[in-house]
Amino acid sequence: MKVKDIVNAIEEFAPPALQESWDNSGLLVGNPSDEVKSALITLDVTEAVVDEAVKNRDDIIIAHHPLIFGGLKRLNGKSDAERAVMKAIKNDIAIYAAHTSIDVMQNGVSWRMAKKIGLTDIKTLSPQKGLLKKLVAFVPENKITQVRDAVFEAGAGTIGEYDACSYNLEGYGTFKAGDNTNPYVGEKGKLHFEKEIRFETIFPAFLQGNVITALLNAHPYEEVAYDIYPVENKHPQVGLGVIGNLPNETDTDDFLSNLKDAFECKAIRHTAIHKSKISKIALLGGSGSSFLNSAMTAGADVFVTADVKYHQFFDAENKIIIADIGHYESEQFTKELFYEIVTNKFSKFAVRLSEINTNPVNYLF
Image 1: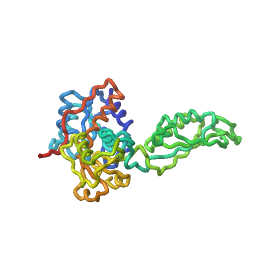
Image 2: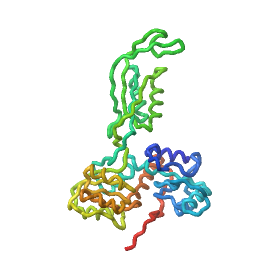
Image 3: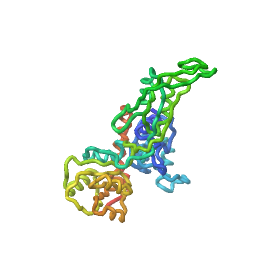
């Protein structure tokens, strides 16, 4: 097993192309070709976590929060991050982080939060725009099945919970083969009419290379006629936060108490409880206060997130209840996601969850 095998498994679930521009997800320390025998999973990488990996002879640390965010200008051991990087390099320990790339995925961080409190009918709270493209290709009738299947296999054709989605229209294509060609049909120098299928399907923009390669490899023509169009539709499976329903309408006080238990919170900061019964809940792991309007527009009774500033609590205006459960608390179950991704792909690979509590926030009661 190599580092790149672990990286590929995670990035198949959470493509790095989907991370925010300011983020630094990816392989932060280590050589992709290095051998690995065991992995340690953590929310944050600290010197104590690296010590834990050294003690247990783990070869790679998989984290949610990147150890290196704005860049390190020097490595002299004066900060925890510098010491962690130095120690990881010295002990040949790779460090990989998937941050916003796993935040935005269906069944990612916020989806795991929703499942912890038993929500149903879960949907993405703020689907992203600009992530979809449309492929239009012209395929001879007798080859449409192999081309269509190849393009679907490359990741095209998914709309929500439906896959293999396409539109197919019969027509005739024309072409005249030149002297230096080897035409699949027709004769050189003669205008040819071929019965073709206009094949249309949608695909995530970050998969364009794979989709076009699949099309070209499966298509019988020397010169393949195809078009790529940008699509303004929102991607229903990619975006920050989720919204869903409680199985039954619930007393607000009971919900907040259950929320505190489910996420093992020391405390929950919340706005005034202006309604006694609730049913629709929005959640966003980590710093999600900027999505308050999205939660209100979606009709949520409660918005569960973290890092809400003092004045932002006023913005609820008795239209929604804000519940700030803490940054670490909201994202802690991301470790379970990583564990499942890796062990489902490599069932015999040794994976451990870190025993270090990296939450920097403490409470005095």
